[in-house]
Image (cartoon, rainbow, N blue to C red; front, top):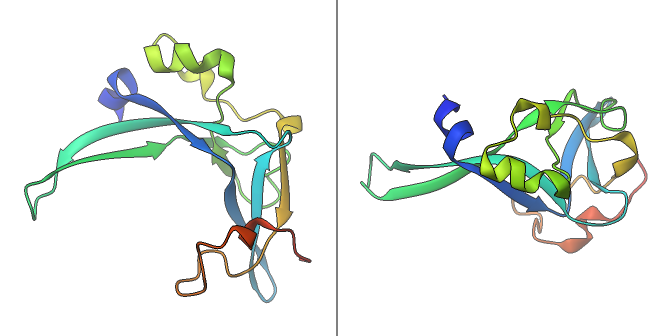
Length: 137
């Protein structure tokens, strides 16, 4: 499904972090995962163009590539986004780097903490920057 995109349509998706949820007895507890140094995470991605069958309009979309979780994130999820090092940007985007770049991030590059359960709940102020503030789990 992604063979052509892997060859010709690579991208990097910048992010300040991402969420994962841990199942707990009373529901799910979200965690925010970010760079240890507070910098931007650079997710390996693929992009493509397709036609919306209902409207006929062209659509450009992308997906983030995932890999096995590292030791930091494994307690809450078995997968994580592929995070590219700056040194690998040119090889990834230029197509000279292959699956060897699609590895788990080093354990010392990520940190995570529990955040409000309002994360991902419609109508609960989901555009609130305090959603990444640490809470008691």
